[in-house]
Image 1 (cartoon, rainbow, N blue to C red):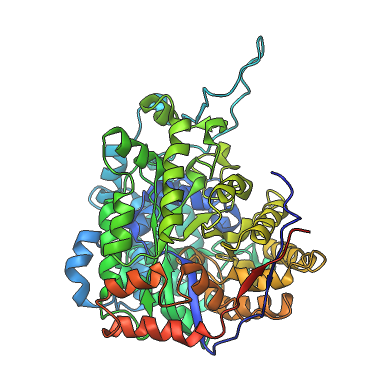
Image 2 (tube, rainbow, N blue to C red; image 1 turned 60 degrees about the horizontal axis):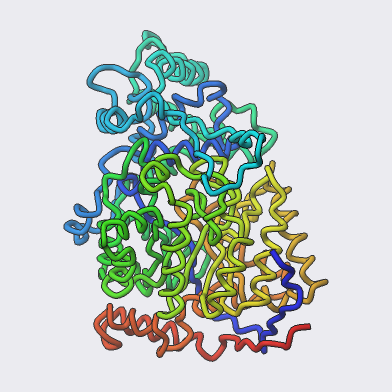
Length: 605
C-alpha cells in the first residue's frame, strides 16, 4: 500500500478518566449451539499448541474430540433461551460444573455403548464430508493470470480436516489419563485402578479433586518450570469448555463478574456475532440458525435480567458468501443487518476475514473455497460487490464496522493474508466517513510471524482517517507471565514506544480501545486480572491513556452524542429516554460527553 506518513490527526486533549467506567468493545457470548463446535475446537488448539496439556502428547485427535464432547451438552439454542430468559442465570457450583464437563469428555473417550455422547457423534456422522472432500483445500482463483508454460503455483498445506478418532485412539488417551491419576491417588484396599475399572464419572471426580488440591498451573505458559506436570493447563481447559454449555445470559453475567472483580463498572458490553455459515459448514453446523442468534441477542439487550447498570449492544456478523447467495436469489443481502440494527439493539457490523475474504480487491485473492467456486464461478468478483454495498450502507447510516485483523482462526492456512489491514486502505479512501475498528490490533500474541508491519499499517490508517480505531482483545500476554507471553508483551510494548518517534502517541491515546475477546480469553490464565493489568499497562506505556477504558470506544460506537444515528437507534429500541435502559444509555453518554476529545485535521506534511 502507498505510504501514509503524510497524514496526521492531532487530538486537542486526551480526554478524561471516568472513575470505574469500562466498555468492553470486543467480546463474545455465544454458546456451543451457535458454533460449528468440532471445527471451532480444531482451530483454537491447532493454532495454540502451547495450551495443550503435556499428557496429550501425540494423541491430539482424541483430545480435541474430548473437548468437543465437554462443550456438547444441554446448552440452550437461541429459540429455547428466548423462551426461558425469565429463568435467570445458571447457578451450579463451579467444582460440580467442572466435574460434569470432564465426565462428559471422558465418557466420549471411553466409547462404551450408551455412554458415548450421542449428540456429538450424531452431528459428526451427519455432516462428515465425502472422502474426496475431507482434506480439500481452497482452489486457485481463476482470475489470476497464468504465464504461458508456467505451472500454477502450488497450494500451501491446509489445516487437517477434523476427523473422528478411532475407538482405539480414544481409549488410549483415556487409559493414559487414568494411569496418571492412579499414580497420584492414595492406595485404597480393594479399589480397582481407574484404568481397569473404567468409570468415567469417578475418574473425573478424582482428577478434578487432584487438580484443585495440587494447585497445578492454570496454563502451560503460567509456570514454565512446571511444564513437566502432565495435566498442566487442563483445569483451565475444562472450565473454558464448560462456558459454552451455558445460556448466553449466564455468559454475560460471568463476563461482567470477571470485569467487576477489577473494581470497575462495566457499563457497556459489545458482543460480536460471527457468521461461520458456509465457510465451515463442510463438517458440522450450528444448531442455532444465525438469524435466531441475532434475535436472542436482541432479547438479551432488552431484558431486565442483565447485571445492574450494564447495557448490552453488539455487532451483527455479515457473511459475504451468504450475501452473494441472497443476491443470486433476489433477496436483500443486508436485510438481517438492517433488522439487527433497527429491531434488536445492535450497534454495528462484524466482519471476519479469516474465513477467506479481504477488505477489498478480492478479484485478485490467490485462493478461494472450492465449494464457493463450484456454486459461483465468479465468486471473487462477487465478494467485492457485496462488501462494497455494505460499506456504502454503513457510511451512509453511521454504522461502525468491527473486523478481525489478526492472522488467526483461519478457515485455511492459505487465507493468512486475508485479515491484513493493508486491504482496507482503498476502502477508506472510497468511504472516508466510515468508522472501522481493527480488532486485535494485528495480533501481537502471534509468534509465527512479525505482526509489527500490520500494526504499523493500522496506525498509519488512523493518521489519515478519523474513523479508524483498534482494540487489544485477547492480549492475555499482558496479564500472564511466562513462556511466549514475555516475548509478545515485549514486542507490543516496544511497538507502542516506537510510535513516540513518529509523533503518534497522542493519536494512539484516543484510538486504542479496551476489549477482552471473552469467552476466548477464558482459556488463558489470569483472565480475572486482565482488565486491571491491561489498563495499567496502556497507561504506563503511552504515558497516560485516559480514553482507553471507555471514552474511545463510545466515540467509535457513535455514543459520544445523543443525536447520533447510533444513539437514536438505541433509544428507539429501548422505548425512549424514560425507560430504565434508556436512562442508563443517556446517563452513560452524558457522563463522558464533556471529556471526549475533539479531533482536528492538520494539513498533510
